[in-house]
Amino acid sequence: MLRYFKDRPPLFFIYLTIFINIVGFGMVFPLLPFYAKHFNASESTIGFLAASFAIGQFLFSPIWGRLSDRFGRKPVILTSLAGLSVTFLVFGFAQNLLWLFVSRFLQGVFSGASLSVAQAYVADVTTKEERIKGMGNLGASLALGFIFGPAIGGFLSNITISFPFFAASLMAAVNFMSVQFLLPESLTEKREKLIIKEGFLNFNKMYQGLKGELSSLFILIFLWSFALSNNEVAVPLFGYEFLGINTTTISIFFSGMGLMSAFVQSMLVYRVAGIIGEHKTVILGIAIMAVTLLLMPFSKIALAMGFLMVGFALGSGLSRPTIGSLISKETKEGQGTTMGVSSAFESMGRILGPLLGGWIFSTFGYHSPFTFSALILFVTLIFVVRQKHFLKP
Image (cartoon, rainbow, N blue to C red; front, side, top):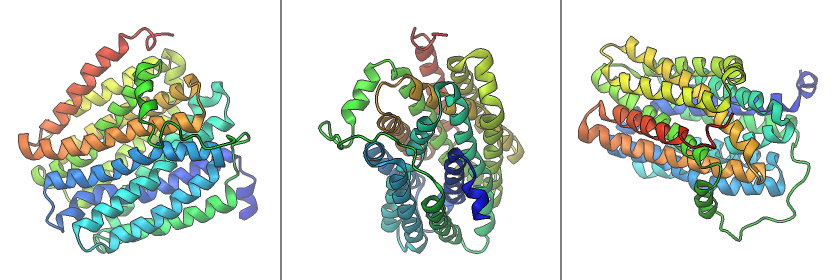
């Protein structure tokens, strides 16, 4: 059995690593609003709790990217998995909201290494021509994790609401062992020193990125993340309070999203990009996300909402890996550094999405988080596609 795995190509193991990691994460996030309710958390507090994860990602993703350029991809991934195992355990044993916030923040810190460094890993071992397919397969691995994760978490929550968190901790520990023994290092030329003159947090690089040729792509990765994270908070609240959906059903709906996203990213996205081009594929994906978000609060039955969630996943699956591929192709910096900055923009979206989503939900009503996200996507998409750089063939 071990020999079979050792004969697999390197990308197989990075895909497997992300899959196992996201299964653990997917077991947890649909349950978060329900778990927080046990501590008498309001909708706004739940938004802050979800945002604390993204704050950790935002602050530390650039650091992980730079560390991976200096010391290699594998050590950073191992550190991430060890930290996640411990923080999931702390979350499950938490006795008050303070410990929920502390452990959720640290989960964001350690998870910040996973996807950005995995993207850098793919960029290390693929040619520019293979990049879109490699990023698509990475996204598919992530989506597959979201198929099994929420379904497993929903089932395990019938034992106790905290049990999925302990299971996620165990999965991260198992993933640590598999990476240690099976994942080869991909970085052949490491930086001679860790560059910190601009500061670890890379705010200056983010600012420069918004003024450079990659600005439209950074804006879109931020918006993609904003809409997705807003959806992850608003959907469980809307389903629970207005449609009477329980944790198991919500988890199954998120698994359906994962199934669609996995299909799109593994089988469809590179074919669509080959026909209409990568830039137009991004436009199509973001537009689908906006339309489904706009329609979602009009759902009168659970099945209608589930259908729209799957449609949302179609748009997400078309846009996310294509944006990542374009960023990695067009960057003139180290892949780890660039993907770390990209991940910081993504994390900023994950901060503002749940923060605004929880507050808007409680202040303006159940429809407002969906409508707000949809309108922001539409308006920004019109602005972005008018840029000559973004419209190039």
